[in-house]
Image 1 (cartoon, rainbow, N blue to C red):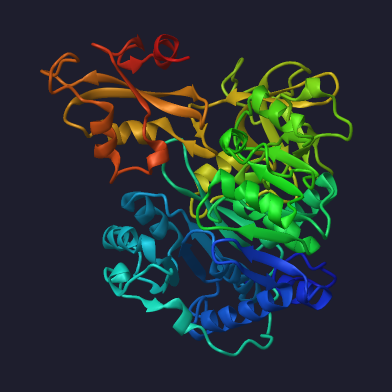
Image 2 (tube, rainbow, N blue to C red):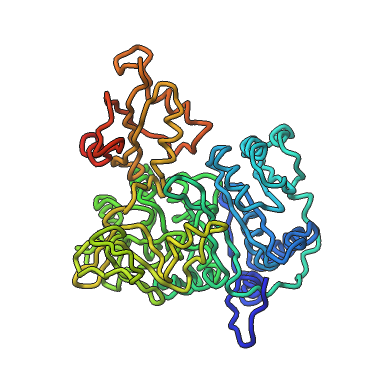
Length: 545
């Protein structure tokens, strides 16, 4: 961890909870809707001090020159917030890992981040235990977070200590580290084109700048309140609204589970003023019985992200007087990069708006298009209205992927972030997302990579070959459809033919459930466009929407 140079502005997270507590000690920064507990900024800072002492007592980061890593597998709860502020104070890195992952996926992430402390919420103890058995990294010190319904047997598979009993009682201020702005604070995982987990390195500077960009572009205020519907292992859980609102002194409401009725109730009872959610969540809220009776008059705006939002959903929110528009972002670049201008016309509803104050955007010829002479010249910018690849540049772009130089060079190589998304710009400067340059699709706000799903399905004895394509889904936006070539001797009309339920049961221990296909189809043989090369386009044309 390097020291900032003379005159370097404070572009790190370190003292945020302390400074916010000094400015607005009695204002509520966090509400836990699951337990009903409410936390002022003064309380959050005292909790962060206790957690920082815990990390230092266990010597996180003390054994090397690099910052140590704390990993957490948990739903949204106050202890995860404490870890965010505490690692800011100590200069350590926080790696929130998805509790939705299957053990092999979780093991790969544990190997990548190599934590010194692993905090596990009790319901996920068995999954983590299996993952640790296959992980190559050294076993970390494990602390478990209990829930009200947990018994002693719930964490019996882990050699762990209760998190609550491990916390020091002393909550007075701690000496805060002064990491360099370019040091990593958050490690957030995203997928790869083959499904191999990648850990994106988000720096202190990047977190600060994304927060400032969000505040200035979206007009966030100190009295804003939001129900947080994204998980805290996701960039949406931290950087979309949570950290920017803490920067302003606003209030974030969290809960263990998502329920559309509960979110509507939170907006009603807490006076919610801003909401960001994936299209599936926004649709579920409009379909809920509480929709018509909920007072939405306090909502200044709502944003949809994580995939295209259907016009019918947007109209349902507009009819209730809520200014709903689409946003765009990705873990590697913020994620908040666009905003709708004031007074934007409804005919631009398919757009994600215009770049925010401190983001540069361009649309270039997609890689591999046109003549490739092997030169290192920058890509050509396409004409307005032409579809190309969207690239972004900003002070809140990530610095790369942890221990993955090849992928880092591909995505961040020339100072611009290659998003892998197709986009166009209209004559008025509005940006439109047109699709993916690769085969990845988004289901309920989560990236799904067909190659990873295909590899898992191909292990089934009834499968000779398989291609997974996205199809529209009213609830999740998109879901996977598995097109299968049966193994020799297996026919599609055989009584023993593979069913969708059997396939999903087979995948339960191999893939997170949001990656499971929701439809299945069979072909006698895969179409090809060349020797041994499957024609994915032909499959999509035949079996897609």
